[in-house]
Image (cartoon, rainbow, N blue to C red; front, side, top):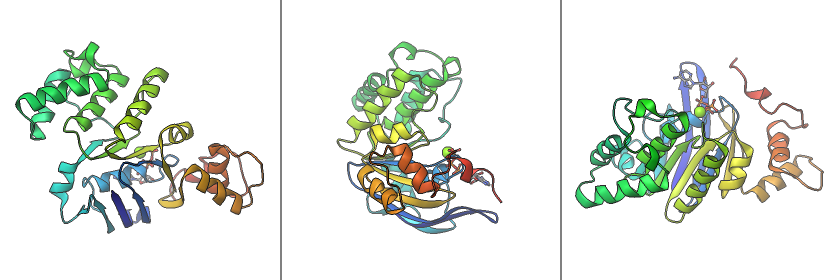
Length: 258
Ligand SMILES: Nc1ncnc2c1ncn2[C@@H]1O[C@H](COP(=O)(O)OP(=O)(O)OP(=O)(O)O)[C@@H](O)[C@H]1O
Ligand SMILES: [Mg+2]
């Protein structure tokens, strides 16, 4: 369970997150959806304790991200926007190294390595050096490091970025399977992605939550704002909530900072 409580983040005078609150329940996949610059990565960096918020806090499995930062780090698996890889290591060496850093050893470490190799489809590059990998394989290796210690909570910043269509389908399926015993927050600006993977959606724009709920609940919110078409796709809902009045160009409101 993840509870985000009035998180605000300022970079200098620029407000990147403005008092956002939301929660992800146990074994739920929560999609954080928003245009470029919305604040998704900032929120994830705070949740994973890599950034210290200006105010507010969050709890992960009951542990406060500020007061219990070390314990929070142990509980989570994190795939950052850019996968944290060592280019000179081989894939198997890198995952062995991360597994050890996560406190795994012996048979448990070997079993987890075999599991991530299979789950993240890394067999064909297992003995390759990270610097040789294509973007998609780097992303899968990044996902493998987030999963190696079988964390209860997964935080994935654009997990399918750089993957080809078949790999995207594979990773989405994997995320759904992982949700059987994990709480997962992932970010994306791809509407089909939240539709395919998330149980609930938090729409974020310019550091504020525009709406949160299931697809059905968001549809009701869009209708309350005047959307009258009989069938509403997530794309229509997104436009209605983000740009009341239904202007085209969904990212227009999020460009630049004033
Ligand atoms: N270290 C920083 N210093 C100053 N401003 C920053 C910093 N990091 C992020 N920002 C700004 O905060 C805002 C939110 O950025 P963030 O990376 O969280 O957005 P995002 O939703 O992840 O976007 P994207 O979809 O492009 O990844 C942006 O306007 C960004 O320029
Ligand atoms: Mg981002």
